Amino acid sequence: MSFKKHPTHIALLLALIFTASPFLSKASESEKIKGFNAGEMIMHHVLDAHDIHIMDGLTIPLPVILYTDNGIDIFSFSNFYDENHSTTSVYKSESTGYAYAYNRGHVYIADESGMINTDEAGSITNVAPLDFSITKNVVGMLLSILIMFLIFLSVAKGYRTNRGKAPKGIQSFMEPLILFIRDEVAKPSIGRRHERFMPFLLSIFFFIWITNMLGMIPFLGGLNVTGNIGVTAVLAMFTFVITSFSANKGYWSHIIMPPGVPLWLLPIMIPIELVGVVSKPLVLCLRLFANITAGHIIILSFASLIFIFQASSGDSTALGVSIGSTVFLVFMNGLELLVAFLQAYVFTLLSALYFGMATEEAH
Amino acid sequence: MGLVTPGIGLVFWTTLAFLIVLFLLGKFAWKPILSSIKEREDSIEGSLKAAENAQKEMQALQSKNEELIFEARKERDLLLKDAKETSDKMISDAKSKSKLEGDKMIVHAREEIANEKAAALSEIKEMVSSFSIEIAEKLLRDKLATDGSQKALVSRYIDDLKLN
Image (cartoon, rainbow over all chains, first blue to last red; front, top):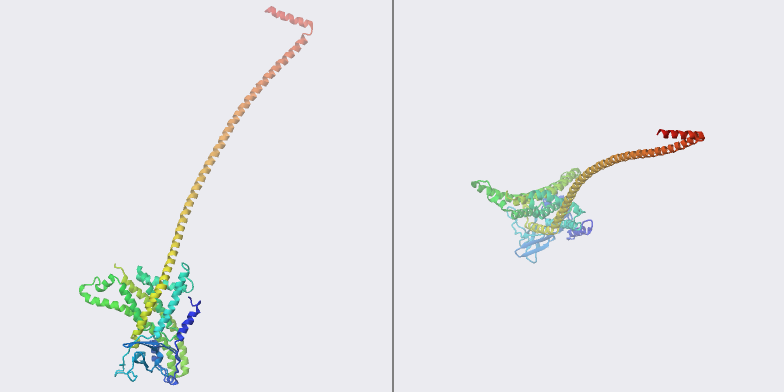
């Protein structure tokens, strides 16, 4: 099922992306004149969204799924678009009877007049239903999962067809990586019982790596899946849960009763040890999130520089700046390509180390 | 704050998606991939070990061969030495035997020669004696051809008789 043999897969993939009734917006001239707000643009790209913004004029609305006390509402995000492609429309649900309004990435239940109210401090007072929407990041995640399935099912098939022989095609590209995770990450960190953790380590490594790389592809809506703290938190939570459940007696006894520590120190030591237990996944989560988000922000900032200079100093200055910016962009993209791999590796390595600590035999 | 507040929807979908990945890839990709890599590695390791063993065996065989060759050489040398000794002995035996035989033959020849010689001598003697008798006869015949001589002889015989 390699890509070369089955171009239909790619076609299918593209069709999947583009048949979601792309909403062609008519960006008005007045918006452009207002000037360029780099911060807003960057945050818009880095944050999750309910639509995929391929480029100005081509936005794919995604399904909104809301869980309310009256039931579940599923509708297209395009219901919030008004004639100017702003998200000011109010959607009235038939099934639950609620009217929804959208504001800065969140869906709220609008009041009777279809308004969103704020208090004196400026925070919104409307009730927000639980939002289980298929957002941009969910789509990105599904895309990377699809790619993983395509790659690794074909690799697995390769192993079935040339059993005991040298790898071929995509199989020979993936085998060194799989062996790298096994021999350089799992075996030294976990030791003898590494085989139990291999499926998780491989899954998390390739998931993070492929997702990181997807985020670097332009015109894919600026996917920032691994730069979302929700995603990294879940991944870190997986590591935490597996660590805790596979931990042996020695691991827990080290936390509850650290050996060689005088009794009067225990009230201090136990909280410290517990902080250590919690901080491990927290650090995993934050590191991946911060690295990827920072990369996205830097790349977008370099691109924004051009438009900032265009707005402030005119087209000729912007042209000059664009040359420098492009050079930096190329450099940063190269760096991010490295970071994409490195962060996947670091996450996997640290997970493996935590597993190793949890399953370490008493000495 | 939107950047660091995880959305519940995304958390839910990520958990679900990753569980699916873990389950499906674990079952249909990682397990067969890892097991076949391990299988292949084991087979390669086994082959290497077998090759090493074969080499060791070869070496053992070679040293054994060398030993055999060495032994064979030793034996050959021994055999050659034996053969040489035997042949030398045979030659010397033959030589001494032939010498003995020759000596014997020479002695025999000498005896023969002596016998022949003796026979010839006796024959010659016989012949000489017969010849001398014939000569004597002839001489006597010549001497006694006349009556006077016969008478003289008879008278000498008579004289002789008389003397006796």
